Length: 140
Image 1 (cartoon, helix red, strand yellow):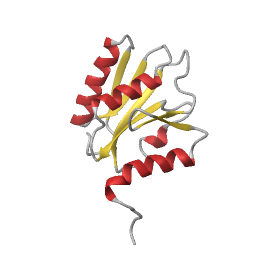
Image 2 (cartoon, helix red, strand yellow):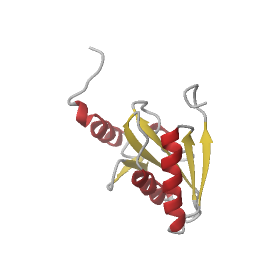
Image 3 (spheres, rainbow, N blue to C red):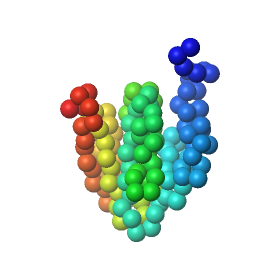
């Protein structure tokens, strides 16, 4: 046996449920979508930090949530960028009044969707900046 999967169509929801259950003192689920955040987010007076990406690489990106790390994560489908609305919800959930920094991989879907979500947040008065990173040869 190589893996435990109850039903393939439930894998992401079950993964998020299990992660939040195992880390409930540190992580909460934002009820609107597949967004996880620090349990104390948003932190007033702090620049929020958001990341996200496709599922299938866990514990990246949800494993980066915590004090001194990421405030919120938008979770995409298996090997797919999170949708714009989900990223926008992550930005809103991380905004403590000092703006939000989005850190994302150099993948076309991530760049496009984070750009659109950032523009939506900026239109709502949330200052947003981005840092695009290369984390492996696939994104270089």
